[in-house]
Length: 104
Image (cartoon, rainbow, N blue to C red; front, top):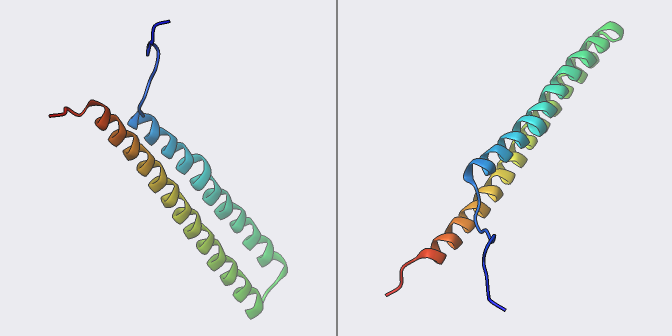
């Protein structure tokens, strides 16, 4: 029985990694933020229709602050995912480089 590496692959496609990151950012993060902002505007309008006074204003300010905090947390979570993807990609690149490094 002969040893064969036919069909074996090793490596990572940097373009595919970036495409995956873009999809995560656009479909998960941006869509969540845009939906939240849109729904928050509807909630603000509904609040204005039934509630007036200082307590209503403070409530709406608190909602806006909370929404911004959530958006910041989503952006930070994405940065963490991006870092992990890039670190994994770099590990594959280093491993690949070690496979072809000339010795002696």
